[in-house]
Amino acid sequence: MNPIPIRRQPNSRTISTGRLRSQGGSVIIETAITLMPLLAFVFATFDVAMAVTMQNTIQFAVRQGVRYAITSQVMSGFGHDASIKSTLITNTMGMLPYLYPTAGSTDPNTYITITYYNPTTLAAVTGVNSNQGGNICKISLSGLRYSWMGPLMRGAGSLNMSAASSDVMEASINGQPPAR
Image (cartoon, rainbow, N blue to C red; front, side):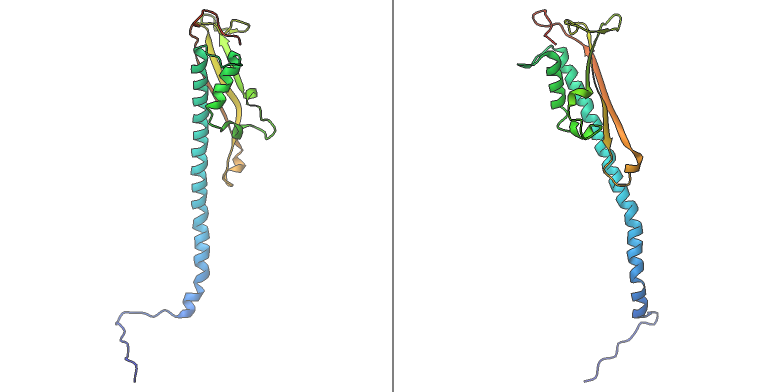
């Protein structure tokens, strides 16, 4: 039996197998060239989104700490300042240890500052009754750093983060502010 002859279309071209083999390496190079910027963009997008999430989380935690502070609430077994710090740390949703400047500094209380101000003079008030009703309570979380995860952003250094919030203290229920 004779094979049936295949008719070619008048404008069709044949590509030699040698030419196809010679183009195989260029596909790999073109893929590598286009994949690098694409991955850099993906890493950068993820890094920036994570940094924004971290900043929003610490701002939320500081705001919640101030909301807790102005009501003069105290957790059992803690003073007023320790209760505020505990509330703030709880509201960071576990992200605070990832923002410490060095691996050895693990005490979050070193980055939390609680300051009370006189509402008329705006001078800092210290002492036993500094957290009385009418004073301004300012809580700040500072000295934190976010290190970039993407390998292309590490040369840029780290991103410093801080947050602060303040509000006027409410009067205590019994008229006496809680022990600091």
